[in-house]
Image (cartoon, rainbow, N blue to C red; front, side, top):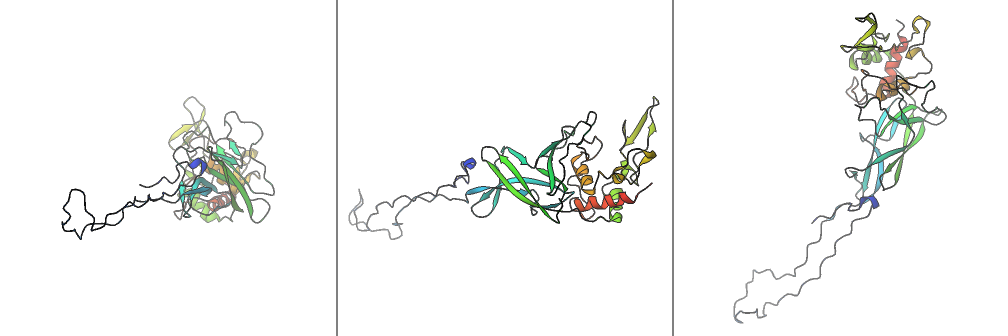
Length: 316
């Protein structure tokens, strides 16, 4: 019988190895068996070896926990990346194993930002201030209940002032305690506007709502004289905003013209459905987390750097 790998995993107890039973006495081939004739021939093929209880088959035991990326990639990111993380058990043979079903994981550090109501947001932004160290956070967005990919996803928005930086993440796992890991954070890569045009207009199809040059969705008259905006075949009372390097009619600048934005914050907004002030982005803004880029890989900080570079060149 195979012993449990972690009969009491919350205590991270090692599984004990079974002890063999003592050998039983055996009969000599010349001994008289009860109820048999003394002169009866002995069966030379009979198994007369000592009998022992079979030892239990024991697998690797639980030695602890650790934080890893959900993709299996190294613990590293660039500003603009969204990194799904998870906690796993470590085993004595050097492998890992998923936590038992129902394990409660709470991400403690860095902070978790709760997105604000787009119809009733505060005047001041709620994102953590950037500084010498890398800045990242987890997200809860109660205004996008269809999203199930927020827990454990770390949104990196600033690399800090150094060429590379280190960021510690910490999680609590039920009654088993806490576990931490360090991510290496690098600056946002340089963007290529031509690659950004392909991503914006074709691959991710941002242009379907925001326009080919990122100027935003045009208004259409509503049946009662109001203004409506057609987005993905449906009408909304609000537009897909302009994203390019313009300040329409002398009003608030678009994303690429606003110094409060960056390529990293664009990546966060597209993947967290939350703007640079922590305000939830409403439907039909899609979830870009895990979408595929032009090479078939998951979209990354580099892809959003490309898109940002494209938007910075658009002035129409």
